[in-house]
Image (cartoon, rainbow, N blue to C red):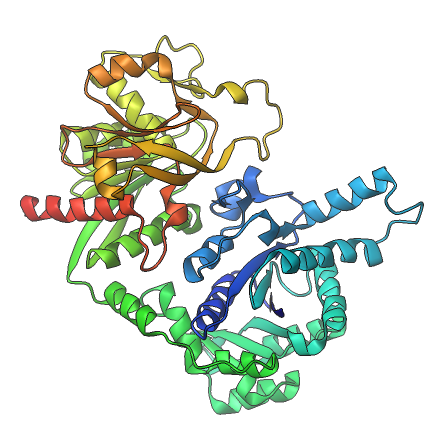
Length: 536
């Protein structure tokens, strides 16, 4: 196996994840099997208990692992099925080291950063190597070179490169190439300093990717190459793309990064076939239609909080030859001003998942606004739960209907805590997590969208539809169109009397990708286009 390690310098949020994913895209289209992983230096065991304002969305894998959102980029850009092995944090590393120490695995030795912590990090690389049938493993290191918390990971990579052979390893360093407007020029010094810090640790980058707003001149390229001890052709410009992140592989391919990496790793591979990717990007950039869809959430101010949802709309828009304009709506604004005034004229409404009671009544009003005005609607996780609550209140005359998450005294707890969740005290990794099977009813909207009767979708929730109210709610017209075959858990509800009203307990956004749009998102966009055509 060949290994690519992607590090970052100068500042955070440079796009290391997108760079790693884009390189994976190019190498996969050269005919190689590629997998990716993320090493995060923070002390949390995983991001599951972190606020979206701290970390963006939590991305969930099939095996239930709660991971960094960059793994979402990996699965969208490359055809790889990731697992909990593909995301390692300092929290996991130290937890494992201390467990081994308590068991006596170290045979009385003094436990130290080197070799015990670095060995634990390297062990994850070897474990993924043993269990993966791929040609290339790309590993992104979170944080910025120079951070105290990330130093031990870089030391582990330095050791690992020596163990597997330097000819099997490619180090790629992503840095910032800032443009100083007052001076009218780009500055290479931050890149020089960042690479110098990396070389102090003992790692010489093979490729330097410079994040830049403008094209890099040949003089700047040669200057960086000289001071950073790399070939000039290995200094790559990573420009800001104009329309969509899916242009990133095409941008990096301009500097032939796939050829450079292949040479470093001694690989004899053809040039990448990007025809399907170019067609996809063309559909994203130049669609024939457009629709406006409101996303009503509580973390709406943060772009990364609903990252996979926004990307799923990009995929669904491309499939329907439409540009999806996302109208971001704060649920609390609806509580203050009302749904009609805040949401206004849109072609569709989506209520995403979330936790806690802030903004809940605003989400419920958004559902009512969609239901009463025949606006295409989709609910995800908590979005399904508030749809059930709204229907129970408005149609079933259960005026205090609620979830026990928000009101434990409700006489009509149509949403309740799952039985297996009762008595759980630890918050981390204790929800219903990962992929579960659902059986879809025939002659339902869900069956029409999926085109099949059995599906597997990823979950992340503690509360569920209360089966004690199923008969009464279904009798009033809300159809339960999919359930878990083992537990009877309600997975999908829909309103047959409505043009398009569907809500699911799972998170379909985690299985949408370019050229593989999720059927629920694709269905919502198609319904929004239909609604717009009649409204206009």
